[in-house]
Amino acid sequence: MDRDNPLGLRTWLDIDLDAVRENYRTACSLTRAKITAVLKANAYGHGLIAMAQCLEAEGCDSFAVSCAREAMALRRNGIRGEILVLGMAEARDLKALLLAGVRLTIADAQSYAAAGEAARALGCRAYVHLKVDTGFHRLGFACTEESADRIMRLHTAYPEAVTEGLYSHLGLITKEKDEAQYRAFMRMREWLAQRHVPIAEYHLCDSIGLVRYPAWHMSRCRVGAFLWGVRPSRSEDMPFADKETLRFCTTVAQVRDVPAGEAVGYGDEDVSDHPMRVATLCAGYGDGYPRRLSNGRGHVLIRGRRARVVGLVCMDQMMVDVTDIPDCCAGDTAVLLGGGISYAEMADWAETNRNECLTILSARPVRVYHEAGKEPRVWDSLTGENTVYGS
Image 1: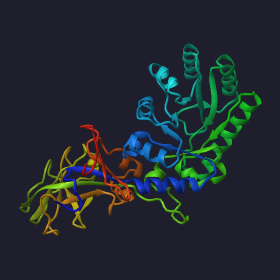
Image 2: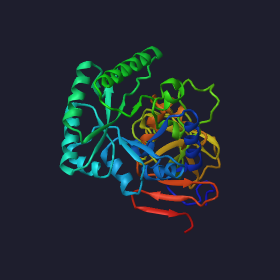
Image 3: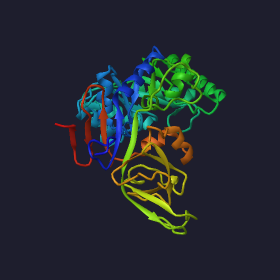
Image 4: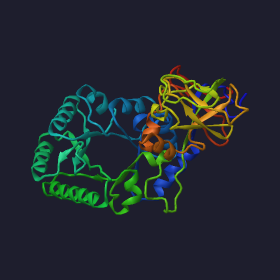
């Protein structure tokens, strides 16, 4: 049995719960505001439920997700803390969300009215956070006095909709543009105050804003990438740690000798002029390894040494050059991300950002959760297996 794969898995993610907790504690240490843990996109590939349970046990009582399905999955699995849906909720989901006490993002008059009417019909309250567009131009009420007037009228017409928060999102392009967005947000805040729309909470900062703009933290910071070890850019000299939290691994299925002049896999874009030993790995873009890393753009670690990707990455398999790793054999572990292949390095190879490298990790790799002093817990979303190793 490979010492790096004691469970005998094919393709898996090793996830370090201690690192997740430490990153959460670090985030809390950087602000006096509430930390809302952003768990969208399956908690950036780490596993929605497991990460919520881990953070709730650490004391986190505020979570954000992208859609109703993520929110309801948290509630079905016993997560008691506040949950904010950051995207627009569909009308068909409003009843379930309101009965579950989930907070809604409201970004236009129609969604405000729909939430108010649904709450009225159910005889309950709809707790809403108003999203305003301060210059990101993605989602939200325009930052104008006309919008403030419209919100005041909606507030009066639908007392069942409790306007709990006002928020926006920074573009994080330049400091000057961020400052312009901040000023727009503060104008909107003042206009709503002048119209006596009661709002308890204000929030603008994400993980990058957490470290870059401490004066703008307001009531809360919505922290996602930071929790998973994606250290905000331009914070390298700041005195805090932000640990990478996962390792994406697979196994070597077969090793073969390939003569010079032969193409490997699909296409013929990467024909070697010398004989190679090629290892076939049990992972591909169907597991979340970017196809863009084909033809030598990407590398993996086998027996502590780097092996370049050969040919095109397939959906379920990929090939790497192990000519310089003569002892490589079937059953060896190959590390694709983390554990020596940093998030930043893969992002550079793929010409993307670190968040994408995590969130494209599919449901197929088994998640293995590690915690000091405990046996690993194995979660397989395809079979439903959720067991402690050895039990």
